[in-house]
Length: 255
Image (cartoon, rainbow, N blue to C red; front, side, top):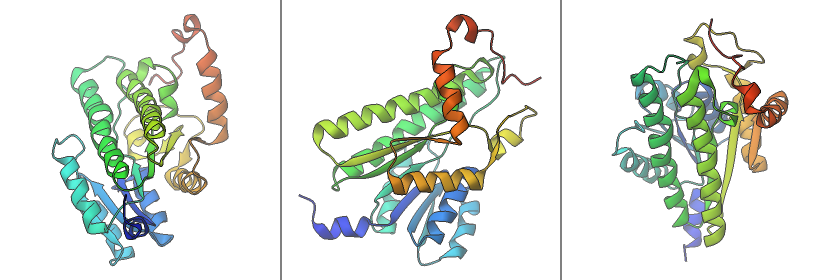
């Protein structure tokens, strides 16, 4: 049995992986503003170190590359510096519009979004399993609804993330581990990922608005949440669209 002081120590202590920019950075800022003790991990540590100025006594940082096999050791070290963890938010990810299936881009996406994702989320799960539970939040994507030709590896990696989260919830329930899960499925968010392309993206929202939706979902402990209710409708329509029609659907192809 885990001592009560360990449980209380984890309250309002969150780790955000992928906090250097975009949604992750905005989520980190909101948690800090809401009084949380926060551990931030990113490859670009100089960018997350900037956030320490918001609350030097409550913010801890670490250089963490999820594609590095030693990343889990860095995560555990960060948790130790933070004094515990009650909330783990995984935002780290990459993606490319890659209809020509450039090998380097495809494998890089899978290494980060599948291998790196399962490495880090799995470690968070094991930590919570041995510390009386916790809350795991993953930022997947609307793109995971169906395989998208314009971004094959990206869309399929996001489907993996949602399915992996489902699997972990099943394990948690079967072992009575008291681990909660939230799968966040954004549509198009104004981040570096989209800014680097010349695509046309409908219903785009700011990363700040996306982060506020994520924090709200965390407090409400939602199991699955779509950022912007319109994308929930789109996902439902996509899910039921026959493959004979889907294969002709090139809405997201860059022109």
